[in-house]
Image 1 (tube, helix red, strand yellow):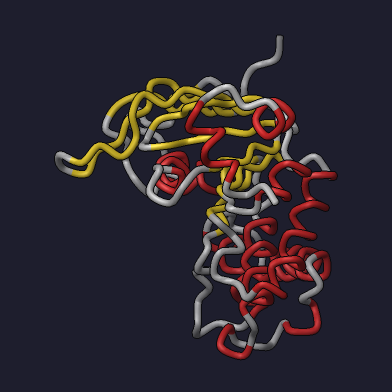
Image 2: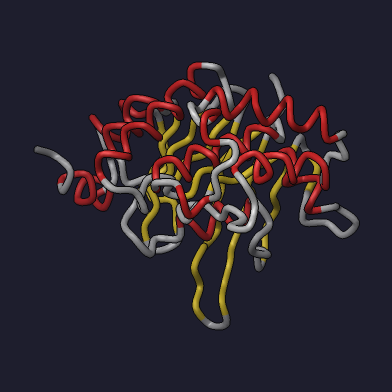
Length: 245
């Protein structure tokens, strides 16, 4: 049996006395597209931020290729180059052009030459349909365009796993489709993705593993068919009933 790419063991996170995540266990394998669903405040984004080391878990393990990344001596920057993240608020550098935004991680973290970084950045900007905008600053772009640049920037690092934290929640409805379309293509290409999303139709269509969270715990997880068509947990059933038409 092949190793898990990411394995979460007994992960908990508290902010003071407020416990946000409790005893989280799951794993991600090669080619997995995992969608994490649940009501706002259920701990989904905190879980992603812990996996990306933007938050330090209170207890538990995060194994990446069987190595616990929470142990002392691990370099978070090197790890994040392998496990990238796309944020709901884009997090682009406002004083840089689209091209510069996509190059900076490669030159600063991966130590690529300017020429190599530019070539790679152009490849991924082309892929997301943003090559015509390479000289634009983020303020000149729509929300959907900013998110496509953010995805290109993450892809340019050529990560093994890409985390998406509600990538469409800050977008106008007409722009949601263009971002989800790119993510569908990435899934078909076999990129390992973990996606916190409120887009249930997308989660059902694109993922092979769905995790339902409520109040900081995983209530249920399984295939899209198991979770969406045959949920076992009462809270899962209640949550999904709100999305049924």
